[in-house]
Length: 303
Image (cartoon, rainbow, N blue to C red; front, side, top):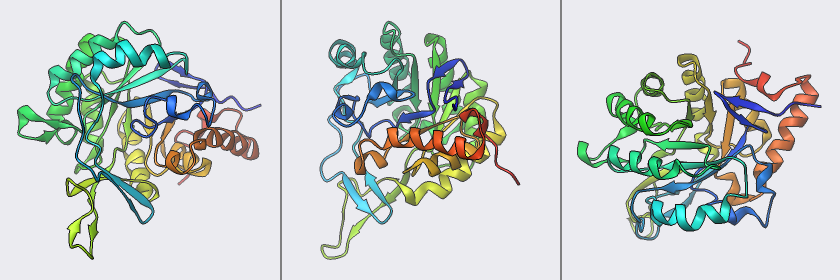
């Protein structure tokens, strides 16, 4: 028997596989395809202080070995989540991780304060890849001081596990990881999507309404692996890896690079039950290679 449990700095998960925010809504969309309670954790769609309509259509485009999206954090706001969504989804998994987004630091703080009374919300994922209006449109995640500031302020009001989601669109992602670690982050998750674009040669127009969007899927996996490895070398807190994980072998590679757990996103659009298959595949890999615990894979890269 392989012990699939992992400990993310005090957050005990039954296995290391989670959904990636924004790819499965709020979990209800998956119940016809899989047992959501079997996941290590359910990471739900980005939630903001106010209702957001998102960007105009078209806002998703398929690309070779990946996909582009420019959803624009469409959601009904924290009030709707607390009053309507949470009562409907709280039974789906013992760990509901809410991805928290905002335009200014105060937005993050407010949303986390509202989530504090929800017992199944055992962690937040602070998404610092959002525009920071007070800083002229600069993303929190591309500036070490800005990333540190939002982490510090959320830490003051959020006493449970705080995961910080890092942007890959930076010169040194390890520097940003160290900045949020210093201000109290319990873990970091990476990578978010890469800034990219698609063009329709026949119409000579951008495919996406916003011209550029975020690239995810297998195309970004080699870069995501490199960044996970670099961050694992730089920080002491757990790393949650993502970026093109389509099967159990991909998940193993991220764990060998230093991830303590993984998030699965784009694969869900192809196979909504992909997370469950990855959990089974991790167990089979450990049995075949003589690992009694899946956590032993973390950082076990040999070189």
